[in-house]
Image 1: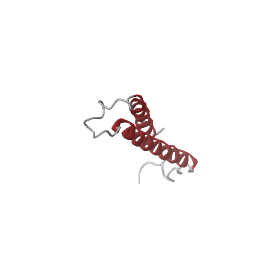
Image 2 (image 1 turned 135 degrees about the vertical axis):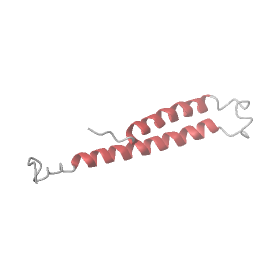
Image 3 (image 1 turned 60 degrees about the horizontal axis):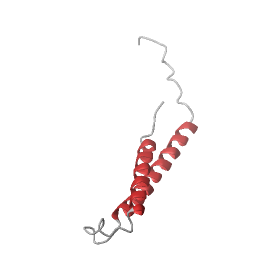
Image 4 (image 1 turned 180 degrees about the vertical axis):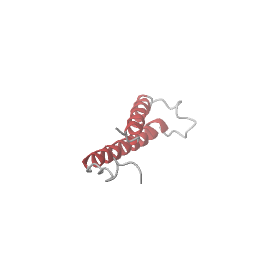
Length: 85
């Protein structure tokens, strides 16, 4: 059983993106929070970037997992049971 690392990585980035996007939306009306970033809501924008990246990774991982499952199993070598020369 193998696990494609893109699946948990995509879930992690998506989860962090949702949290950061929600924080960016909740602090959108507070100009003091974004004074150092020239008034740009960096939490919202980077949250959206993380969310999109996470979803791309998750869907690529699911596609690769489904593709690997649909491939036929490799055949056993012909001389797997024989010992010697």
